Each structure stands twice: as structure tokens, then as C-alpha cells.
Length: 184
Ligand SMILES: Cc1cc2nc3c(=O)[nH]c(=O)nc-3n(C[C@H](O)[C@H](O)[C@H](O)COP(=O)(O)O)c2cc1C
Image 1 (cartoon, rainbow, N blue to C red):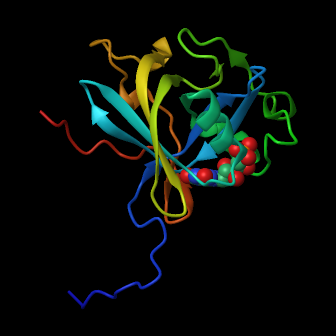
Image 2: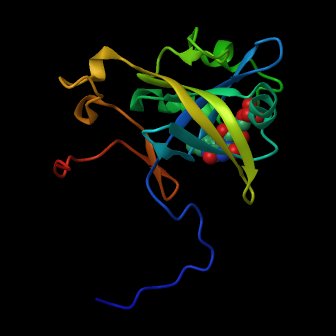
């Protein structure tokens, strides 16, 4: 095996990460959406806490900091064009739901809506925000995890084999990939 090269300008070095659509609202409950490549599980069961990394200049950064709620919506691969549109305009001067043609559905516990076209929606209450570097880390406690029945397995959990997802690696988009083996 040849010697590894050292990359001195790493960019998003950990891969893959899910592409997610995060919904938030303003003080008048007008909804906004942001595309994120940086969404992760921070605490996995007791309690369940997810993290999202948002740059300070994003309108969503202001909305989530002020209203302290957000929803993580995980899109199917078919939504990739809309995902790119969401990530190319700001809610400061666009109504993204109307202009892109996505459907808001009421959440149970929070004001930001679910995106109907996404098979998985995770309602979150903001716990804290921490400045990290060029992005800030928002930690959200999960209040409800909505899953489309079409992607549920017999055990009542989502079945990755039925899931269509978009993941990012090295600046490219991929599907969820091949099943290698079961964990247990
Ligand atoms: C594929 C993709 C991934 C992105 N990932 C992030 C991210 O992880 N964090 C972030 O702050 N912005 C990310 N962006 C940029 C925002 O989605 C973009 O700036 C958006 O227009 C901000 O919307 P807003 O001003 O309405 O909040 C990403 C954009 C795309 C297209």
C-alpha cells in the first residue's frame, strides 16, 4: 500500500452525512426551510438529542435562535432538486414552501411544520446553541419522531431497506447504499 497523502485543506472530512431539510418559523409563525449537510445524533436514546450545524449568516440561524424550535425533515432521493432550491435562496426574501412547492403539515408539539413530502420528520425543542467555528451547533431534544408507514419494518422501527435518502460525501450526493450486514 502506498503512503497516504496528507490533505492540508480538509473540507467536510467526515462522510457521509444525511442531507436534511430543517423547518423553523418567525414570530408570526411564517415557516422557513434550510438545507443542511450537517445533521447528527448527539444523544441516542435517553434522551434523544440531535445536532444541526448552521452558519450565523443564515436566516434560519436567527429564527431557530429566537423561536427555539425546529423540525428535521429527511427527504427521499426524489426530492434532490427541491433540496438544492431550498439551499440556494434565503427565507429573508422568499416563501420557500410556496415557491418550491412543498407541503407544510402541522406538527404536534412545535410551531415549525413538518414537510409532507419527507418520509421522516423529527420535532425538536432547542436546548442550547454553541459557537464552534464557522458554524454554530444547535442541540435539539426530540419531542416526536414521525415516520411514514411505507418505510416501517415489522418491528415498528424504520426499515433502512425501504428508505430512500440523500447522503453527502466529498461534495457529491448519493443514495443510502448497499446493505452490508446486520449489526446483531
Ligand atoms: C447541499 C447543501 C448543504 C448545505 N449544508 C449547510 C449546512 O450544513 N449548514 C449551513 O449553515 N448551511 C448549509 N447550506 C446552505 C444553506 O442551505 C443556504 O445558505 C440557505 O439558502 C439558507 O437559507 P436561509 O437563509 O433561509 O436560512 C447547504 C446548502 C446545500 C445546497
